[in-house]
Image (cartoon, rainbow, N blue to C red; front, side, top):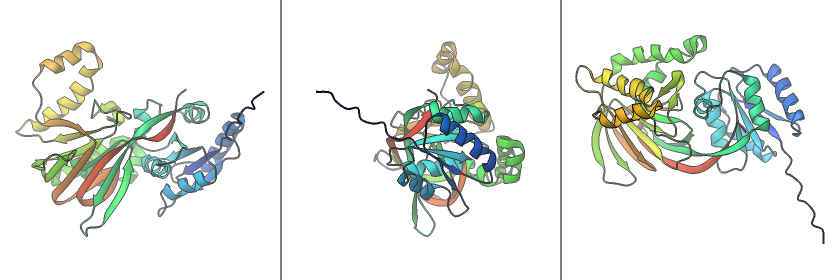
Length: 327
């Protein structure tokens, strides 16, 4: 007896776009043309606002049948769409349109050619990656839960992001963070905190920056957390605690020279193994981090400021998101 084939699921794309980042009129023509060539149904369009970054819009898109939701905007839009796609079978499509384009960089998708990015959305494959989760507690005790794709952090990196001019970012891109760093140095002080990794005993320490990474590459080719992988089921935790007159120089040497140059070759990795470890930069791994600061500190998620927090609980959800990548 002949068996009938199960019909393929209709494919439908949705675009969640930030009108401040993209020319939607031009983008509509490009997306609709590519969708038609790929045999997709009519595309759904959703515009973000100051009040709605994209989470609810993404859930609405999935409810209306979207099988891939394209984030057209900066890292904040990508993070919001990913948050909306959590616990769904729909895929995240990336159309890099911001300053950092952090997830696209870590997926080695290229960030400068929009035609290439659109082609990946409609002819690429799905890759399953982890999601980072962060429950942050405010001064008033209220707790908020958010996802992150790349990194979460408090201390100097969060101050730098908070002090970076949005106008300068628009003019010179990620180099604006150098100016933000300069503005943050007068506020520089070690952050005192208590922490527990994977429910181990609580410990007290201090650091200028604490970051939790789902992946580790930053703009400019800076490999901040070299062992972080998007699909390894763990989070990589990094602390910067420079000491002495050359403390920050040691930090920069570790990140720029060891991570950025030596790790790219077998000989270089041997040099790292033989060299004395730099105590100014420490790395740990885990699936769950609880951290309580002595004083409220600035916090950031994927390069966006999230205000001051008094505590952070961060954990990983393995394989929680599908992302459309190169075939």
